Amino acid sequence: MKKNTMISTLISQFFIIYTGSMFATILFLSLSNPPIKSLSSEYLWQVALFSLAADLLSLVYYSKNELTRKQFWIRTAIHTVLLEVILMILGYRIGMYGDFFGGCLMIFIILTVDAFVRFVSYLSDRHTADAINEKLKTRRGERNQNE
Image (spheres, rainbow, N blue to C red):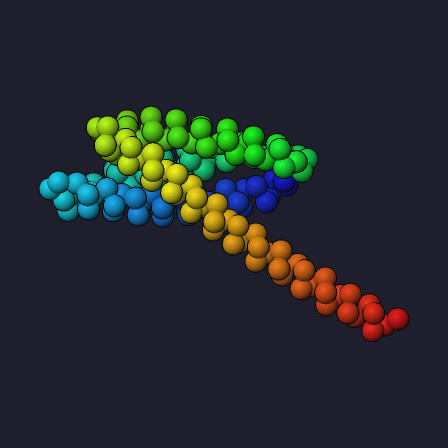
């Protein structure tokens, strides 16, 4: 993966992760008893740092060469374990959860946001691939007409 592609991917994924984290916060707030009505502005910065940590963990996939299928799945397993461990520790320190039930919910939400980020990235990559394939078909059609 080229450096520019990696940077643009990291930036777009950061915003997706931040959005997912804020939706998870809304879920946590609605499940708390009694419901929490407001958050401090400091919490928004904490979620931004949380999202940045999650985003930087995707550097596990960075490689100068194309990854084989086996390498991809190994890195995916490493990424998922690191994501859970680091975000659970960071989430506890920030105060995103405080008990066993909250920790279990946090694990589920981290996996859900990770799946959401992967899905959005897949859709983006698929759109890019479709655009490239369409251009290739157009060029092949033009080349066939010229011959």
